[in-house]
Picture 1: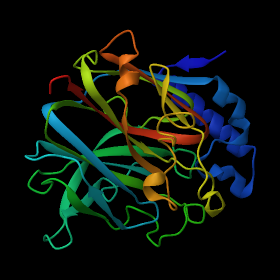
Picture 2: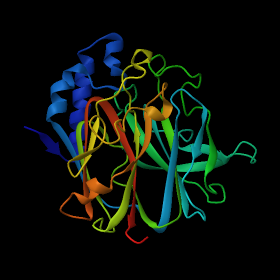
Picture 3: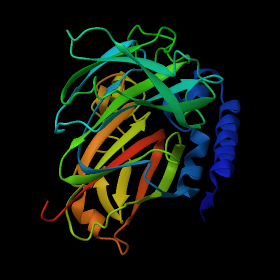
Amino acid sequence: MRLLGSKNALTAFLSLLLLGSAAAESGSDAQRWGRPPAATTLATTLLVQDLGRIDPTFRFDNASVAVGAVGLRNRGEGGISISGVSTPMKRAFAYWAVITSGPPTAAAANIFIKRGVANGPFTNIAGRAIGSGPSPCWRGDRVTVFRGVIPVSLARGNGLYLVLLRPGANKSTGGESPWEASDPPLVEGVSIVLVGSGNSTATVYDRGFAGEMFFGDLLYRLNSPVSVTNAREVVLHNIGGDGQTGVGVKDIGATGGEITTLNGRRIAGPGSPAGGGDWNGNVAAPLPRLWDTTTHEVTAAAKAGSTPTILPFTIKAPDDCLVTVANILTVRLEGR
């Protein structure tokens, strides 16, 4: 038996399940530290959340893509180094997620970015809320995902990008472990996506995808604008929030059990060619974790399906509350 339903029905189910389980517990146990309450263990084997078909939010032809990220839980600033994109630039985006009690404030909806240490002042990047869901098993009642457009005059290509949060975006910026300081607001992390020139078709998927809090199984299908039948290379970039491998310092070095499949073939997690998973918080390892940005070459798995423009994914997360942010897909055809 599986529970399968609409976003609204599943959100209500998740909220009631989490709140009911927390009410049955006491003290610090009621907070679960980013993991489902113990009473939901059976539910994770029954719950299947299906987002349906996700169409591209943006498409870029003759493109290349590079991504980078920094985890920012209990931090006020960080750096992102990016390599692999070719100029001239076409577009650049920043993604971030914030856990709050009540609607996020302006401090959470804006970040500052500059390129390089000595390249002048920071530029404010205004975020647009593109998705939200229940808190991923931390204090607070929601998580909100933001997308900001970085001017190409600032995002000039590969290099170091510095990120500065506004005062009040994070409750704490003292660098404490998330398992020692966890009062909202809680910034998960920031990822930068650079789209430059190249030989691939690049598609960005965030609308209808971002901000889904889930545990158990998550299903979705990316609608590719080009067939992968004659693809020379297919690359997937995944951005996600709240990934972890345990509940603190004692679990540093552990490996999470999340598994990602494409057309039924493992592309991330135990038993996959990648070895590691997409939801370990490794962007900010060993601490604070809780933010992921990964890249996989998935050509063989993409071609294994019966419909070459529909790419079905499944994420199995038996013991972690996670948040979807964005997928970016690049398809390079033979002869390019």
